[in-house]
Image (cartoon, rainbow, N blue to C red; front, side, top):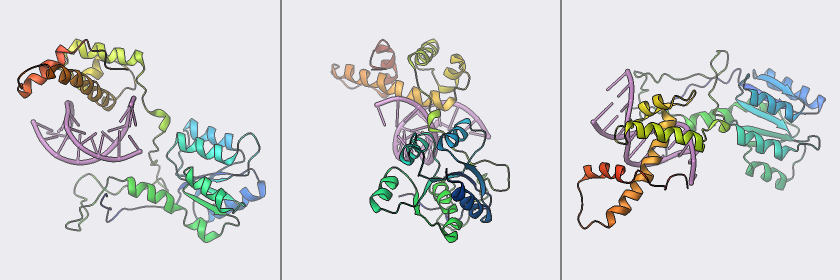
Length: 265
DNA sequence: ACATTAATAT
DNA sequence: TATATTAATG
């Protein structure tokens, strides 16, 4: 269980809401309610339109609020699944349907709330909590609990939200995870071999690979796995040895197993 | 301060 | 599982 931050500043004014609803009356109403709560609303009348906005990334959002009575080409569940797959945004479902089994279905699929119509103003007012929950629980700005003093001396000043400032919440796009294709992996292997396994550190491997957009962390992560796999084969080889070797010889054995085919299976 | 990496999270 | 991120360590 993570410790909770004792103090996190959170501006819920101007949180960016992506509103999706193909009913004009309903979308107008919700839009007005949201705006009067000082949310910044972008309204879409069709889910595919909403997905385009999310994907092109030109506009950042803090939360998605969506009706789910869509046209037949995309139902609410599909939309929800797609948004959850591609983003980390909290998704609030709004619907006239109030059957418990339907609601459970949406919650199970990852909706952070299901609001049966009519949606009351006081509920809209509290939507910011879904953004706050995500940010606070996922936050690493944990304030020292022991002395109860906010540790603002270090660079971890409390970050504010989008709000009036131009700062955007970082929304990790799940699609943006690096995929180590055979091609990319081969470049990696070449770079590592060129350096020699014992000198291969992320920064140098990154430089040698010379792949735009590739980050040191990507390489570091991949290098860990690569070494682990080499280590496994080395350990297996070691089983055939009678005695126990010194720790430093483990490094040498990476070299012994360099022709291993264990990786990429 | 910065880089690496073991450990952990998603 | 593959990849990302955190946190300890140098």
